[in-house]
Amino acid sequence: VDVDVVLVENKKGAFSAVDYLAKAGYKRIAYIAGLPQIPSSRQREEGYREALIHNGLPVDNNLIKYGDSRHISGVKLCDELLNLNPPPDALFTGNNLITLGALETIHRRGLNIPKDIAIIGFDDMYWSISLNPPLTAVRQPAYEIGRRAAEQLINRINDPSRPTVSIVLKTELMIRSSC
Image (cartoon, rainbow, N blue to C red; front, side):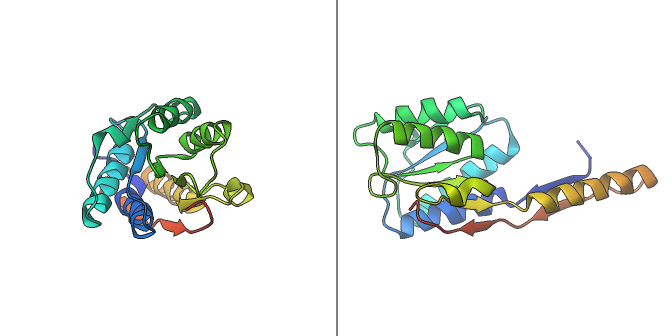
């Protein structure tokens, strides 16, 4: 569809998170993704896969789980991953609700972050620094996304025939203590 869009560097953000985990020594890095038909989920998975390959780690499809981008997906899919033999030693989650669900499962099992399992989430929410330990996360410029989207909407209203615009904003890995 030819429309104005404001996006973030999903693939690059995911790559930076998984690359960081691999360089920190984690070998079995799992990914809990959102719905695969959502472009951002697919882009984040591409970044995940490319980071594994870049670091000489195998892409194990058993370590990739697809959910519906909600909290309950994080709970259930993290549980499935932790039941693997051997379980993952690190986890990359595709959005903030999945992250919360995964954290719930990790804490319910009495696991220590990052000693038993490391975790990085995609979306750096205001509560990320309040967790114990503080969550390493890929930050999206949420305010800037909203501002730029509103700006494009106003521009479209003022000039409906203008060419469409695609704006891609940078992400940033916020390194904290969860890995």
